[in-house]
Amino acid sequence: MAGMGSGKYTELGLFLRSRRERIRPADVGLPTGPRRRVPGLRRDEVAQLAGASVDYYNELERGAGSQPSEQMIAALARALRLTADERDYLYHLADRPVPAHGSAASHVHPGMLDLLTRLTSTPAQVITDLHVTLVQNPLAVALLGDHSGFRGPRASFVHRWFTDPAARRLYPEADHAEQSRAFVADLRAAAARRDGKDTEAGSMISSLLATSQEFAALWADHDVAFRRNDRKRLNHPALGVIEVNCLNLFSEDGRQRLLWFTPAVGTDSADALELLAVLGTQQITESTR
Image (cartoon, rainbow, N blue to C red; front, side, top):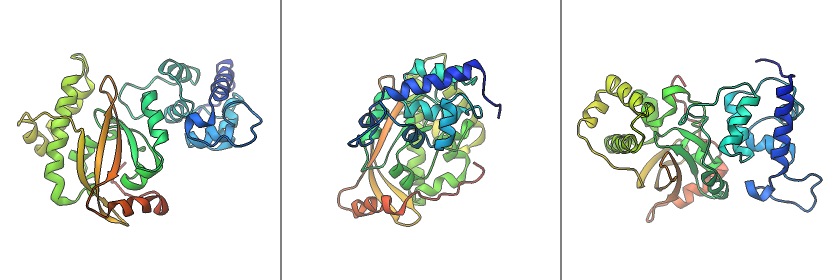
């Protein structure tokens, strides 16, 4: 990576510090504590929220170190609760192109991120309307696996569902047909809701039509239905099958969704979900990430 040191990178450090100092710990779900020597967040707290080392973040604020990746910029924007304009400015200062809307580095709707921060006792994540995972809380990672490492078309879980058999391990085989039909109907609804000039959804649909006979057959049925509230069974390598309710909260433009998972009534899923925090991150090996 390129080294940092120009005037623009100095401005990047100053900008990060200014955004850090305006945030209260409670705004991002951190305890305030009896004594704080600095206004806003500490550097180590920002590093923790962004998944960076403290030393690396300190270098960024000094305008030194290596050029941050697009993924790191996105993580910092979320940690610092930047607006869309501030996020774009941060990319500019880091000499990185602003990611396309809907990519894995997309700006998360501030209201969605605030709610996600407050959902500490239940698995939750924010995804796009094309099922690209933008951010997960620790319990969602423990339940579903870490979906942050996918790029390009494979960032969409729907795309992986129809092109990579490993993605289907999350659901019992008996439920695959039902899930396939629901994914296709949801994708048709999402594509119809987008602007007519949008190419992202159309490109994804064309790719799946060309590569998946199952998708093509289901697409020809013309079913259309957003996934709003589902009851589903999920495979967990340590806990077995966990039956949950999956609830959705849509952003105003429909491009992002907050998903959270609650135990299904009449099952032992409540006990299983409580064990997630103890067991930690689920290790799912998906081929060729």
